Amino acid sequence: MKSIGPYNVSDLPVFNNKVYHLDLNPEEIAKNIIIVGDPERVPFIAEEFLSTCEVDRSHRGLRTITGTSRETGQRVSLTTSGMGTPSLEIVLNELVALNEIDFSTLTRKAKFEPLSIIRVGTSGGLQHDTPLGTLIVTDYSVGLDNTGLFYSPARHDKHCELLEERVRKIIDAATALKSRFRGKIFPYVARANPEMTAKMEREAETLRVRYKKGITVSNSGFFANQGRDISRVPLTVPDIDSLLATLDTGISDLRVENMEMEASFLLHFMDGLGYRAGVICTVIDNRQEDLFAEHYTHYIKDAVRVALRTFHSPK
Image 1 (tube, rainbow, N blue to C red):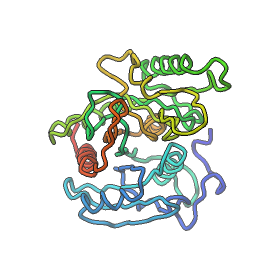
Image 2: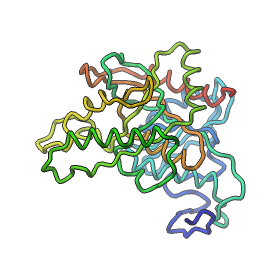
Image 3: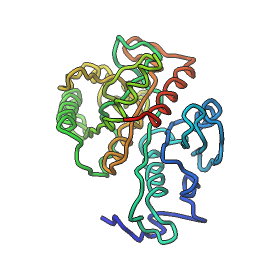
Image 4: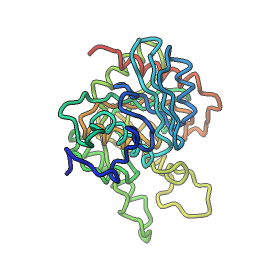
């Protein structure tokens, strides 16, 4: 493990003191970061919640704005992950490099302050009793993508191993015996920073917004990966959304509440680094009730407000 460096420019492309994909230098990123999937959501949040804008950069479809939170007075960065964990893997590695690497020598700094990152996103609700617009605060994430499998941090706690076993068992049982992919989907489970999760719950209660704490499943796609059967190609795991909604998680008072595409790798990678990370996603469709919210921007605002106040919240 090359934990110190120096790193080759082909491993960590840096040009004009800027990382390649985000096109940012270390001074242009804050210690508190909100990550969203949609690049257009970055200026939307900035206009609503920032009083100043010191950086506004867009490169390769990745938008970043750094400024000051109007409500808390803190410096904060808003950045895009793109859709799915592969793009997120690039963004997170570059954010970490901006924080930890001395670009003049391409070596790791002896000291650096860990970042705090919250994903604010949209998701599909999996439980019948979840109204559209509910905010889901993620406690554990289940990764059904394979991005996290290329990083091997220790599990956060015993529940992670338990969930991995239970999810794999239920998926294998639902896969056809003759399927060439039977037994080849390997879930990985991570936990959000417990302190950050508790703060998000507290801020949601203070703001009187509807929320639930639960388990979030991250998929590598939107359609078959989440149980949407609209193509003429057979699905490996039919009705995976309904299947996971009924999972006995083995964790008291925690159900699989929602599906999206990024939480798994964020929590897996950040926990391995010792950074604080959390996830809060608005439910914009309910898979069990066949409902979809056409207008949901006000719910996104609620989630952003919770995230910003969480950064500012005392222990």
